[in-house]
Image (cartoon, rainbow, N blue to C red; front, top):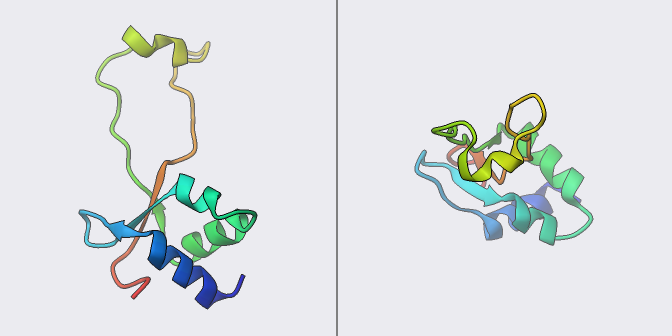
Length: 89
């Protein structure tokens, strides 16, 4: 994909983020098809970062089955990516 095609696609998928930048859902990028690696490379090259997640408030509990044998939470791919202000504009 060309730079302008990716920029146009992300402009369509993005929404405002509290930081002032734009946030894009990983699921929306995946739904666009086989160009996922190229889109992710573009996001990384343009200072895009995975959205920070909050740490769990307790260990175990309702979702303790999601813990691995070492007692640490499963490592999953980020759900959203944040682009700095004016990256898509």
